[in-house]
Image 1 (tube, rainbow, N blue to C red):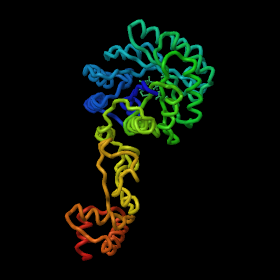
Image 2 (cartoon, protein in one colour; image 1 turned 90 degrees about the vertical axis):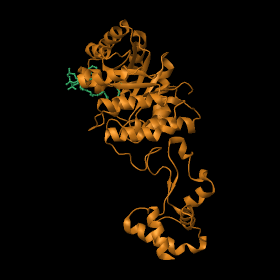
Image 3 (tube, rainbow, N blue to C red; image 1 turned 30 degrees about the vertical axis):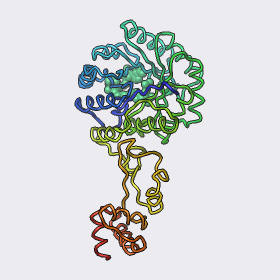
Length: 371
Ligand SMILES: CC(=O)SCCNC(=O)CCNC(=O)[C@H](O)C(C)(C)COP(=O)(O)OP(=O)(O)OC[C@H]1O[C@@H](n2cnc3c(N)ncnc32)[C@H](O)[C@@H]1OP(=O)(O)O
Ligand SMILES: O=C(O)CCC(=O)C(=O)O
């Protein structure tokens, strides 16, 4: 798992989340940010969508970023032409590979699908483009047929094949088995594209990488169709911290990036969201805060600064004396731990009444009232 490519699709699948639209400035800002922190590759959009999209893609293309840029295409010559017109040198061509999708898009005529794939790969390769192919709904495809399509794509000139769990129905174990088989047959790298319909997108992406995939689609905050995609920040941190694979991405800016995409998409990040949620390094519970004050490793998997956060202790319903005493100490008030019980009782009461934790001013005024 050492030469993994992150191909971030915030600007394509991320923007496909219902109700989300990025304007040109936002698309450019997100692309620049992803590039600046060291993301290798960006799927920047769908040129076939028309002028608004192609103008944004061309603007990103003109930035001459370090990251490789890809346009997403159907197996249609006109889609490839639209990608070329944006100045893209890399195209991703998607074809349906499950019976369900081939029925819906090609009236069940898989030979026609293969013919279109061959034509579009050749058209792109003849124009000097680097071509990747995506197997849409690969997770529900007949496994032998999937391998055949991928082998044809490879033979016709594709440089990578994307395994798509389009409706997010796999678990990590089945993902591993299916991707392992594909990797075994192909000489070109396999890319993972996972969806979060059962909350398993990141786990499945990692399972695919364990099985030998060398590239992975992510989106910032896990934004994307329906329940979203594998989150960039989760995949990068899981690889770094759980698998000891540092992709060279500046993780200290992940929070800033998350906030940029949350603002541009209008999609708030839930407080409990891994890595970038507001509560990921906030501690209210007495036993946790007591542990953290002695050694942060007791209740944190890594230091908050590694992803751009600062640790926060907050007083609330579940707090204990050590936490409250520490917060007061930070304000220059030294209290004997054994004399904080009445203050703690007042904190609980007010927190229950307000249905939230207390800010420092509220804690201070309770302290003065209970003296
Ligand atoms: C799993 C995924 O995320 S796939 C990506 C999905 N993303 C999007 O759909 C967002 C952007 N899409 C769009 O802006 C529009 O759908 C467009 C511009 C691509 C096409 O718009 P329209 O021409 O109005 O077609 P519409 O969206 O209604 O239908 C999709 C068409 O693409 C065809 N199609 C779908 N997938 C493929 C494919 N992989 N290869 C070739 N054709 C395909 C469908 O069969 C249908 O064709 P038809 O019009 O000949 O019946
Ligand atoms: O690239 C493809 O083939 C399809 C990607 C996708 O968005 C999906 O399958 O969910």
